[in-house]
Amino acid sequence: MGLFDAKPKLATVLGKAFRCLVCGNAWFWSREVKLNTTGAELFNMAWANESATGLVCDECGYVHEFAGRNRPQLWKEKEGYPAGAE
Image 1 (cartoon, rainbow, N blue to C red):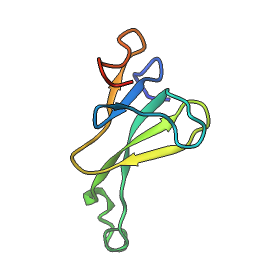
Image 2 (image 1 turned 180 degrees about the horizontal axis):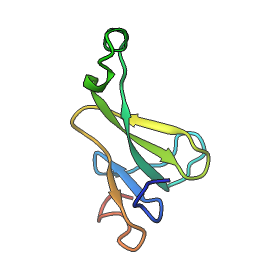
Image 3 (image 1 turned 180 degrees about the vertical axis):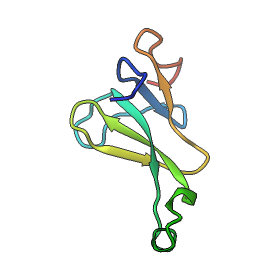
Image 4 (image 1 turned 120 degrees about the vertical axis):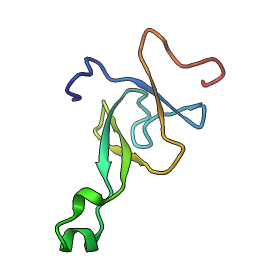
């Protein structure tokens, strides 16, 4: 899915292993998601809206959005989750 990502990745949120809320899958693609507002769209300034991190489930395609300071961390398959995350 990603332009340079060859494989989906594992994710942690607040140091804990994250799984898809729909199907329970552990593999995700990551992408930036714009949080559009009506005002910015009305004045053709959507580019100024905040962004969130979107984790797209590799199995079912559900998009989980994370905004704010505590964004998800991504881990390659061979690295696995960090100690204590599972």
